[in-house]
Length: 444
Image 1 (cartoon, rainbow, N blue to C red):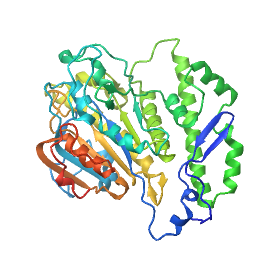
Image 2 (cartoon, rainbow, N blue to C red):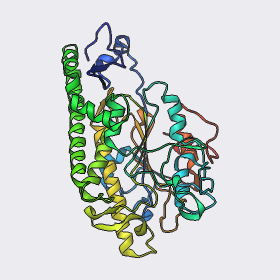
Image 3 (cartoon, helix red, strand yellow):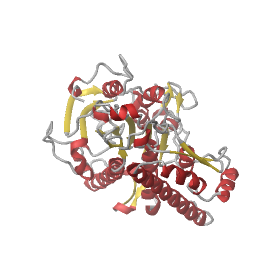
Image 4 (cartoon, rainbow, N blue to C red):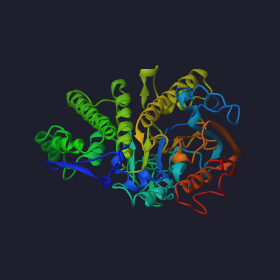
């Protein structure tokens, strides 16, 4: 690290042609006095949530042994190389008055069951991610991001007299305000890294025509900045800019493909060539959001409850939701297991990206608390007991992985929320349906 008398401001951005580009954390942004101090600056902990729907084949997910000696089960196998940074937690539950998909999605982060309604009178509780965002948002441009791979425009009536709107999101700003989840990578990219002066499609296209690339618009500023950086920062900046450029290329390619397909037929969910790329683009955008410190809180739905997505790329051409109602049919259970493992394969991609991205003296994964799981365990019965829950990352030194923790079943999922919120410096005496902190996780 090169120590200078004056550090680069943390919120430095590059500007050009109406475009602004946030920068990642560089060594030159660390205050000089901190850099020479024997006590390094405390790393920033980020919160990520990744939600998967329709339940999981629990005997293929849950390790049979507790503690550090737990075995890697078939569904967890794609995450085996991150074993030491995984905390598998069993015995957590979100009990509601009705065993139903809407309860699973809504209570996952709120700990509160949804109000039964077929109209607009939605009610649940504020979600844990938004509690953290209230505090972290004081230090970032965006308080939080809410992302998904499936559109959330379903507002009809689903099961048990509940509106389908409850399945459109897992994030709630208040007990009556669910947050929409963005599915379009271009919109996310421009929200994070590009200033288009609004969301009007015509304005966006005009800006694209004016300067084909976000990076092209700030080329001169990048050149000026490089001259003032040390070699390590130059390398870090180069890797970051290449990641931005790569995402731009992939988004443009995806848009070109969509333009070609639309005149023929609207593509159904689960097109093999699109789903994998869509997921990876959204994960890469999350890495950029954390890397530039534009936000420290992101919630991401891989799919919605009731998802009918098909997965022919892994040998499952049948729709996800009907497959989850397997009625103990071993063939359907095997296919559901494939879907579950495919989702953890995508998670592995995300963890790899976080681990490869420098942050302070470690990586983004070191300074990350990532909650992965779903609001249902047994999708066949709509059970919200003994949920599939995984916590990954180092939590900025506050998480101890490499363990399978068995809580007394049933333990409220909200007990985990309270425990994690405390690690983020957002203490709460109670939250959702919590009864206490998880003492069994005191070593976190």
